[in-house]
Length: 271
Image (cartoon, rainbow, N blue to C red):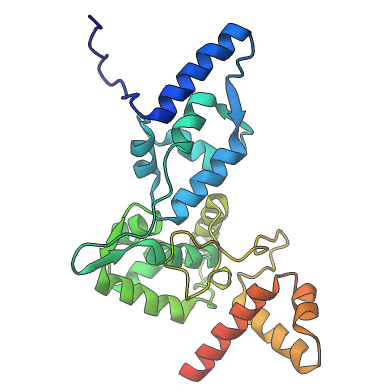
């Protein structure tokens, strides 16, 4: 008779777990066991899960991990390797698809992405909560992917604020404001969040959608500055520059440039 599982032990019933342990035993017998795996593949999968609206705690629970510390280290750290057991556990978590929300609510994917995009610009949960009339903790939980659904009214309010602020820098007149902007911008960079111009308004709610390629630039003058990029692009196009050449001069893909111009046109019409 098998002894009962130890307290706190995690179930190993998933096929991927059973395959992992069977393969591990085989490789150990052959002297080919490699206990570490490439962290980059795990990091990419974590970002897909995050983009789909799963928070670190939700991912840890679905992976059978006791806490989310390992996930934080992989996402925000610079480690090149991760234990094979943790890699298999995280990679076994499936990216959720579009699902029906409860009555009066909607999936939080688009709302989470909008708050994360504003964070890239430096908008903190505190600054946004004040404008939305929401509790700070609620804004932070939605932004960090800890909510699967949000109230439809909340999603509408955040969408309207996003349309207003997508190309606006947050207040930075005081030292405290500048510290807050720098802190949230660094957090967004570590988290791999994409700026507003990297998202298509038509697909931002699709868990399978991804930011436009090429938005990650390291010179500090990238697509996060959407209004400035749109102005520069409009000048180049008016001067007869081809869209492909204008995008190349600005260092962004044509699709990203198109999004910035379309947003600028919508803002102009609204004004």
